[in-house]
Image 1: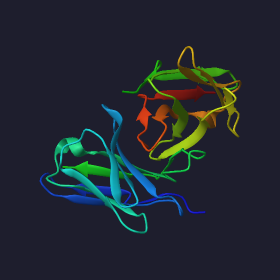
Image 2: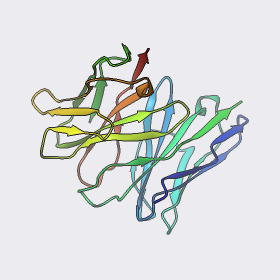
Image 3: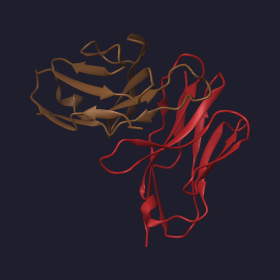
Length: 115
Length: 114
């Protein structure tokens, strides 16, 4: 079956703009999590959605937001972009409830560059 | 709070040599443990997982990891590495229940030289 799909793969934005990233999880998965990866901070958890509800949230400013649709697809939005938001943004897909399969599967990521 | 420490940021080895990538975690509750691998300009691929049961887990490409509860460790090993194993490896921990947040280590860059 198809894996986790993230679009776009690459994005260049200007400071002050906003950006929306998209993630389509594996079919049947209802949990989508987002991570930011930078050389300095490593992999940091942004938030997790399950059945259209934000279930967990990391320590990021309110400029970072997300949502999940009824088909489990998720979008992440960053408003008022800063240079420090340049990163690889990764989406992870899980069943979200079955304890026998608690692992997450990741997409290829969206490389965001803010100039 | 949970944390993961990967003791080596870089590990260079020669092809066909054995390798061990070390991972220690801190958690006050029972956890699930994972190793992910990341190739350049790629996402993370799940290498192996420890959920419960046997403390030794294996992947299909020759890697294995052993869960040691008393030492809170989950070290990754491979008896003979290939050039194609060159990548960054991340250890991650997750608590049970409805919290699906993964806490990652800083990663270990494994470089296999001919």
